Image (cartoon, rainbow, N blue to C red):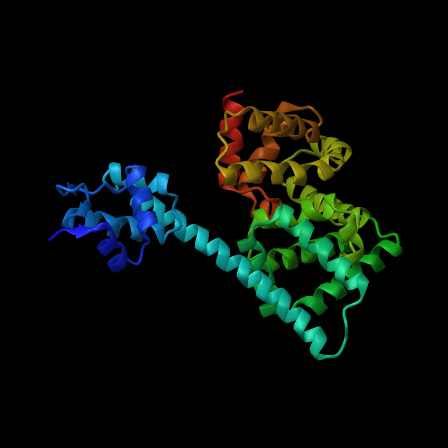
Length: 338
């Protein structure tokens, strides 16, 4: 059975113009021409059109469809995987928007028109979050926050933080160390134990001053927590170092504390994006890692080796650090290629 172009257009739901365009770009060329020059399509042409239309439903450009059909459709599984990933991103974006609209609806239902400050704060938070987190990560954060109902607990923690700082509590005190550990544990719980997301939260709040008013936690407060955690880790290192080593560490270790999280976050981003460890960008970060690692050990390679061994052995040193086995392997690979 042979079909004229008008008949195929009617049966397929396509326009004659579209079929002629397919012919012009050699995507679907009629296999038969009548004696009068009419385009005639046979069963193989109709089967090819079916495949074209099926791929079009995946929102693929015609040029890509043409390449796939010429290749026998070998890349179809990859295309389907890409489309699934795209749909998942759209679902995450829709879920995030749904949550924001529900929050707004709740305010309007209570007859509380959001103030300009509320609108601006929401805009600032959305803009900053989008620079550091994927839509899927933002959806995860929001979902965990809703399920845990941790808003009140977090506010209480922040109030306690300000109270400790107002008292002039030293970061090296046991009370400060215990509070810092509780703070980190709460944050880790909010991100499902994901050290990478914890580092992104740190980087976002460190780099975005506009968020300080919203969160109640500025750089000074972040330094108080990170320095208290550093002193807590020093107590663990004491099990691996001599008194002379510890005297050096107390002079140098805490000084490097503020630089590490941003460096770790940058490296984790490259790792997640698949940047080769031998790339210029990653090697520059690896050099910085190497320099900081030596500096916190007072420039002593032997002490640096002791700290590395302790870090490998003690989970308490790794918790909240943002450093896990994949990142360590990535950094060591980069250092090896320096």
